[in-house]
Length: 343
Image (cartoon, rainbow, N blue to C red; front, side):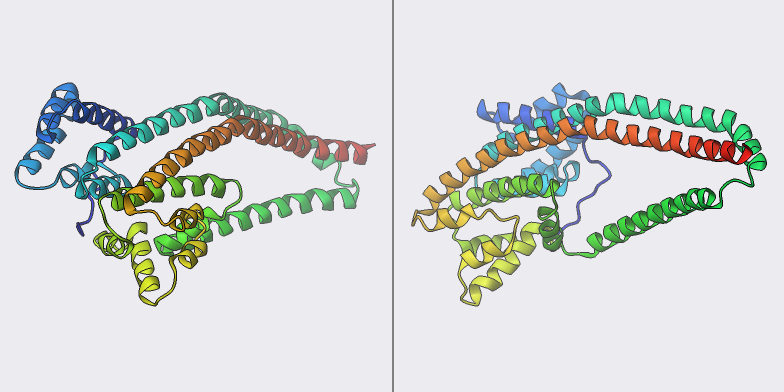
């Protein structure tokens, strides 16, 4: 389980969605994992070699999740491995199929929302090229004639250009530093930072609530206590969120502190978990509550993502409008200034 995951043979998102949906249907129909892979190799000839490779690894004694590990991203693999380890593979596969299908549909919505803005942006670039090509000689000529124009106007124009360039440079440096800083942080710190971002953070927290509550429900459903959950999570790769959460929770509990203080410390852990824990339920009952809660968070996540997608076009059109106004101002202000100087 500590092996690095090979990223060279990852399936595309759409293929993963179709794989989990087909696999869930076959498992519900009573097929074994071996039969599922054989049937999938027939149903999806383009991935035939991948399924045959996975089948060979399964027959050699590897677990199902290990057999298809190289085709999935790490989060999906760990969720699958966790479910398989505790006899909840069918439930997890079914949930993954729904989740991946929604991601495919959302990606298509984003592409559709960006289609017209991209066309307009392309036309805008052509317009800028034409304007600069045809108007540059005229503007240059007027500038030569209007050298005696107002010094204040010229100072404002030059200052505006320098200020714009400086602002753009500062933003680029800030973004590059932010990306560098974020990559250097441990996974748990990155998730904490993402969950506190305005607008996007609200959506990310919904995803984290769903992801963590669903996986915790699977572990509790298998009869594990919180100390055992921590020990199980320590079998993951050290750079993963689940490993780091398990490590810190284990240290927290061993120091004699209550779990509710741990939950309050991290913005991406649902505060509702404290309410569930205070109900005094058995692990099985708590697991059922968490599965219901995970499904609620999943539905809420879909709605929030759809709202963000609906904002893409208005924001894109607004940016394009600002660029157009800026272009015309950058052309017209020098012209009017120079005409004033000529008169």
